[in-house]
Image (tube, rainbow, N blue to C red; front, side, top):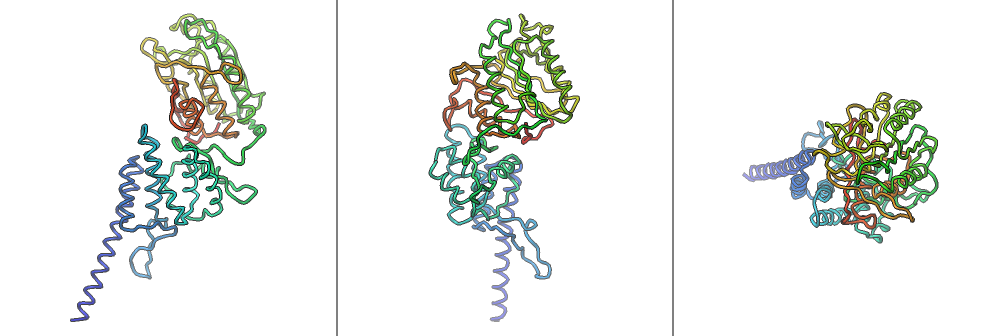
Length: 440
């Protein structure tokens, strides 16, 4: 009788343990599924359910119940990270939330990441996201203290949900320095594609990449009433200086046109494409007037007098063609007021072919604006681009990261690290046949 009671109790405990195991594994799998679908609120709830049944993260693999002769590892030996992923889900919610809600999500994520550090669960991923949030909220003392943790980052987390651009940024920002400590990147946690390097800051011109070329067109003196851009020439000069110093462009590979006709623009594009190697990279910047006519984007020549006169304009399709035909990746930036012309807005046309990124200086229906910088009147968009080039200081800049940094630079008036009150809202890069971390 006693043996039967003991056996029954043992089996009961085994069933309870099995049920609890199924509970945490089911919740964890549900969290992964929700996160892959972009439902971060549900993902966070499911990861919290998992940790309710199995509280602590585990850096190594988890053995599943079964015979010793047939040992099985959960998820092929992946770490168990419900606490880390719950914090990460809160961080992702902060990226997309509006107003104070975003700050609340970031604060929750910060608290939960900090709790992992206190448990000595120091992973490079936790350091990376914490450094971003410290930078965003100007917590310089915590950021400085965090750099001392870099050489302790040996904890493994389940990182399969991290965005590719975050993984790329992380690998760059955690490069060891001469003092054997990793460099923790100062990143903008509100966008977190991530890599504005902090200490040590780099100085001097960036090494030239001979396969990078640029075409900068400043058509500020067109004859369209209200569409002149008085600062166009200043923008061109600013960007040429910026990319040759901070982005690895050889000055000999940078062509600048000021107040050119449509024919001159087409000729310059064809000439530049002819001397560019196949599979190389083009940065294209245009400031002036543009229009969308018959579902096509057109750039106004200096002699354009009517917003519907395409005979004095160059179509974006024709401009891209000689580059696309050589497999050249095009990274285009348009500083154009996007006022309605016949109910259409410039920037609506997608590239018909090729590897193309397109970023607009402002939202549909809005105008572009300028500021005074170093004594010169320059476009807000061109100024923000110049500042971000200087901060990233690299000859291989990931396009989505660059776009986010420019976006927040403009929205914050280029003066702070949170909030925003600019009159101008740029778009993020729209990518065609390019990855989010494609470099230019």
